[in-house]
Length: 331
RNA sequence: AGGCCAGUAGCUCGAAUAGGCAGAGCAUCGGACUCCAAAUCCGAGGGUUGGGGGUUCAAGUCCCUCCUGGCCUGCCA
Image (cartoon, rainbow, N blue to C red; front, side, top):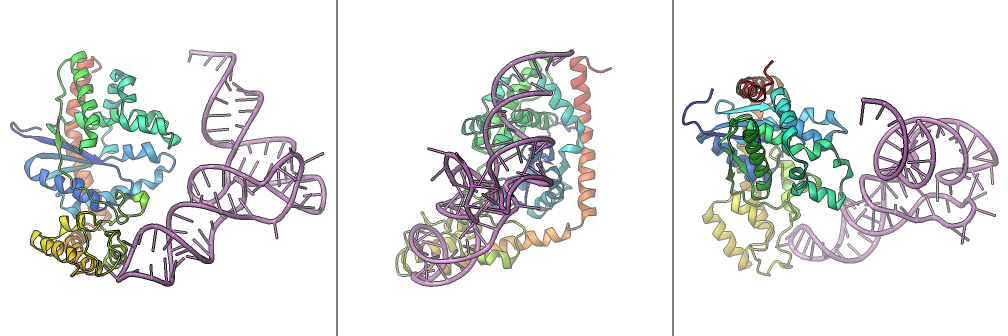
């Protein structure tokens, strides 16, 4: 049960593929910090994965354990944070159903992500009830733990606002219960993919947290650099170079200044710069690999999720009991 | 439940107004160029044309049937 003065954070990720550097520096690095300061509930959003993967649901299962391994490799500690699996806490589904009763369609249709899909007709396979309603499920996932903060990027603020509106509406209709979680705006360093576009699995331009050195080298060596630097003796511009954002994240500042100087003076070529970056990336990834190896056992992952699920359901069951009371559905 | 339209390479689509060698662009991979990458040029791979049956010397194309998706009409709640 909640201690007085305790501050809570809730967040989740969909198990749809291996995590990459963008996930780490955009999200996970913050999570690892949060687990030191707050009571954290981090969940594998496997039901959410179904919104896009409903046609091949069996593909999701293997990624559940892989996602947890990526988390642990990144430094999440099951002793510090509650790590659990959404679909194993049926209370999320019950609250989703009840919240869906009070959520006006207009709120959902206003969802920028939904509007985008709708207008551009990019993906008609997302024209489902589940996709339209996923912000409600998200609200249920979050609200059920009465968190103080939800870590969000700037672009996800509307989503959280919807969660807050749903909480407000519930409280207004049935009496105060839910707290409106605050946005924990995370400063996430933007990290482009290997080809300069957004790092994304579907672009095939990712460096994965689990990448081995053999996989890493060709990826780094074929990265986009400064397109204006045609020859070795041309001066480069770190500000427009696709490589430099990586140095900002994995290379110490003093070394970075040297790179900046030698690049703009054409003392170093891009190959030199890439060799250096490769070394830094290895330094960064090696401890992750080591930790991953410690957890590379289905039994261990199962045990971690089992323990986390137990803690989560303890919290969720209490809140759901109170939700039913508020509605007069405690038969 | 009935009617209409659609389904072809990973993606977007061609292949005449009565059947005649399954193609292009993008993407992917390889090579040239480049300090590397990008751009550009050259090259390659990739297909049970949704499934099954039929007509024919020959079917992506015509016929039957089934599956999937979309639109319209109806029925039940």
